[in-house]
Image (cartoon, rainbow, N blue to C red):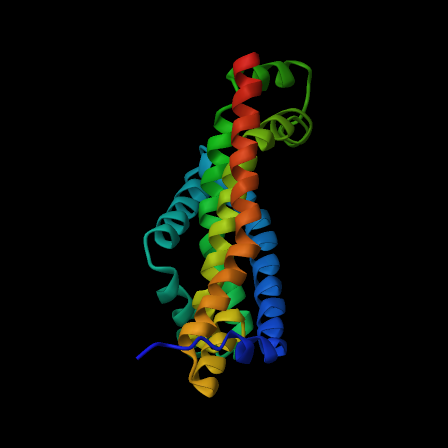
Length: 224
């Protein structure tokens, strides 16, 4: 029997998918922006010679990089309220879980970027009487960030894909709304084909941007 596609039925319920897209975007922005900030502090702590800073940062990074993000989201949603007595919504639990997971990867990107700056520049800044904070802000970070950009772009792309996992804890992002639509319409093939196309349209520009950044920086490096 020949299957008749019914994509029109899916597009007629576009409002449901649009709501999912908006929540996916909000989840992505909140998680990524907070992960960038937290990752910077973690990366610097990871580089610190002080064990009181280095060891906790290292433990944090290794735990979140070596456990499944799905387990982390479920833990924050179910276990966190039990341990702390603080109830959190599915969206907050997902934002927190994705932020903490991504911040561990961002910390390693910061660390690698900062360590790529030659020691002479650190020494020159100190010789000029700059404090560590001033040296980091005015000399080291501007150079290191250019080298980190492709890695951060790739991380942002991965995070955008990871937001779909939040549907497991009932966050009404795109994947959750797609599952609802597929159940109501009895058209799972059309629904998830459309959703796959939406994810591709949203994510591919970031993937392409990361590739172009890598090529541009490689060209500059070769020219230098």
